Image 1 (cartoon, rainbow, N blue to C red):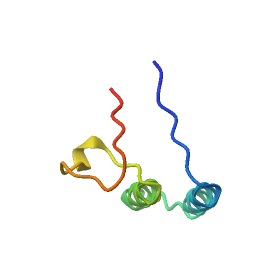
Image 2: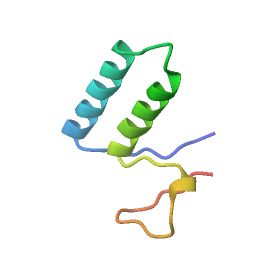
Image 3: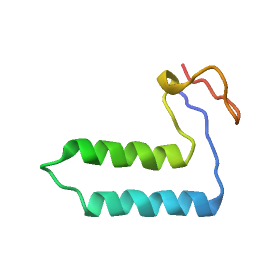
Length: 66
């Protein structure tokens, strides 16, 4: 299986890593839904969304991976 590579600006990438690290450090096992939401938000900040969120229009380029 091959996947497409996506490159983002270094600052965006570093900020995303910082957010994910903070999420991991503050993980509360009693609230796993909060963890999932925070990870989804961090990915969304990078512009990474599942196809189910696609409404038919997009401001950026669309990459479809089957």
